[in-house]
Length: 362
Picture (tube, rainbow, N blue to C red):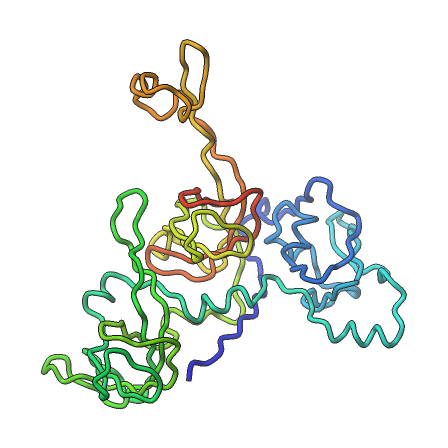
């Protein structure tokens, strides 16, 4: 019942300004590059550009590269300049002299992607963030016609709420609360899809008459208290969406990782404490920054705050005697936005990223 959500991430850059659109070559950008298996358009563009999200300007339509989504491993790309002196990529000679047999094999390979769809797909389909309103007043499972404490395919579930007959619904199990790092208030609840079904009875919450859902696709046990929401509400992404530098006002932190760890790296999914209410949009590219360790002055000279004696730490009200800078250590892209929280994929990182690393406009 749950339809397979296929994402085609084709990043069409919307110009923020002439300066924002200006292509800046990366330091030590190569003059040529041979595409390798597993490369993505982002990876390749990052070898040439300081701002990889501007890759469509580098891969401008030309006789050599009509469609950058059809670049295959083994093909050579050369960096050249147009009549206006702007950089662009064109195809060069293949790394090897292909025979007809090998050429057929090349066409069977998968072309490079902007970002691996296999990485994003599970999170688009199964992960969501529930609001406090969803938990407090949203429809939820009361039980089933079988009287079991948990249910699977082919059972009827009774729901405390009014549903639209014939409409498809998802059932979600609430996980841990997501806290704001600044206020420690709950700003959402991480939840996983556990099943889907179709409403066959509307119900009437006012008269305490339950609605009924016929389960068509159980992913795991469905239990009393699980939250019911329309399928694809907040789940679907457009087939094509813009990848752009985030608004300068966006400033937040990484507050949770999908893997449950405190450190994570490239192509892992994280949650940030910025969402619709902060102006965050799908496709926003954010820089990940980390505050450098604090330093305090002692009689023996400057030492890191963490290494300072208790006396020196007590003598200094602030964590550091100096306003230490935040250094950029990676980039991420937002792909799913809720009211106060967003989900993002890490595009690159110089070192393992951590919870409470800062996220800002690049």
